[in-house]
Amino acid sequence: MKLVSFENGAGPQVGIVDGDDVVIVTDAGWTGGKTLRAMIERDELAAAQAHATARVPLASVNLLPPVLDPPRIWCVGVNYDEHRREVGREPTGHPTIFTRTPQSQVGHGVAFKVPAASTDLDYEAEIAIVIGKGGRDIAPADALDHIVGYSCYNDATIRDFQRHTTQWIPGKNFEDIGSFGPWLVTPDEMPPLGDIRLTARLNGQIMQDAMATDMLFPIPAIIAYVSTFTTLLPGDVIATGTPGGVGAKRTPPVWMKPGDTIEIEVTGVGILSNGIV
Image (cartoon, rainbow, N blue to C red):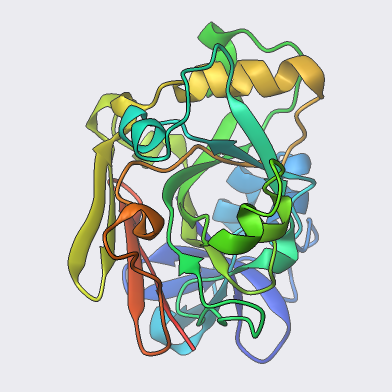
């Protein structure tokens, strides 16, 4: 399934993408959870698929981040060797973890807002996963069973604020500078991890390009590590790191500016696109 959160004048709703349509789950007859997070927590996705009947054109709705209200958004830093080398970081024995807030991200088709405080807005293409079955001390061999879906993520960053200290949270959490979507694809419709490609295009030019297998800490290892220090919860989002080619490390630096379009593509998911204002 391709699951979407969307708005079409009646408040946030949940649907399933079917071709050029969205089949609405949360219509008047649905007695289950009203958000995708609630459906994941209550293990209602199969029931939601059986219930969905009413259709609207996909082009007629405004897409929201697939999980509007995640319990947490965990982000992995410097998780591709090319990016590690371009930023001058030494290899580490454990993933670098930081957090984002839901207010820092928008959905597919919604413009990023360059803040008044800085023009150093950089892109970061990432593969996002969403936890379906929570747990603590999850073994790497069991980790993929805890994923309910995959999506595209743009962990966009205000670079000068990121560099204010060794803690990255300020640069990652300006409102409306990152994105998540366009939808959540269940694992049964995704290719094997070894076949998943991650690409960023700025105004049509390829800026980042890597395979999921290029990660220093693969997805099962990330899930296992995070679940050692916290109980992963249904609906938790994990953004798994960005490859080399970020704008900050180009000569001269390439910042996203008003009028630009940034696209993040993940094999099996599709394209997450956002303009800049």
